[in-house]
Length: 351
Image (cartoon, rainbow, N blue to C red; front, side, top):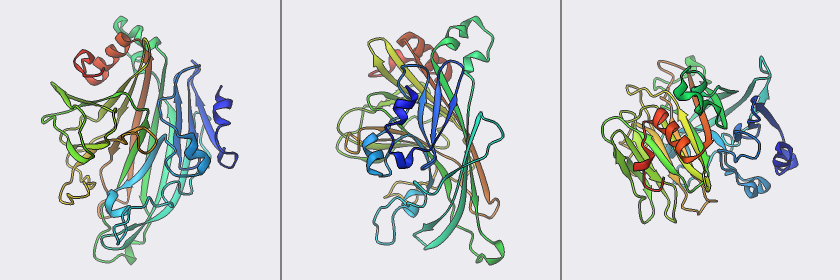
């Protein structure tokens, strides 16, 4: 089954590494773009990530999976004329697999140079990524309450990303480099509901909208909204709101449901430089959620940002996150959402 799935990739880009668990689950890391392109909890199960096989055949960038970009977006992706363009040297870039210490680890690396367009400064960087499978968290707590949840179809992956600024400090001007940061983007199938645990104010910032926003619901300490319909949008939560965890709940069949949970480190005292296109004064955007409204292939994006660096205090930034993917009945997934996200699915619209 894995082989037939991988055969759908163009022969010129069929360079993969697989990580397998003992229960038939596997993760697929694609060398081109260093993308986690498949995350499957077991035989016959659907992957957690969205993939566009037409884009693969055409060789365009928007193929799906989990990827790493660098932000702030409009300083690095919109040139001096205002034209938006994804830097090809970043994505897909020139990633190559590196030797790893064990077969349980996959490592990739690339070097590239980005342009910070507001001041036309070049920023040379090295990106290194490391992937490994991780255990079901319910298998790590010896309690009868969690035993059944530990037996559900599951796959987990830890991703460690390292950003290094490549420059000679002696050749720098008196100005520090512009602040940049790692930006992680997971593309998911549409039709589900985003679950965002929050501190304090539960309202997101609207970074982008078409005509109508989705229905945004707030429980105590949890905000939720769907990736459905014809209107695209992008919502943001700042670093004071973020708990360092969010989820995505989706129906797979009559009584089959899935839950993706992402966990990451958040640092409220750090600078998060990404901002809406019309709000360059706004900083702090830590979690972002984009839905394409079916216009770019039909997908949603679960995104988070790491704290920034500018070369003054540090030249290296390391970020580690965990992805957990569960499949089960509605009641089973509701239990997991309660334990990992503090969410009551009975109070979530569309869930």
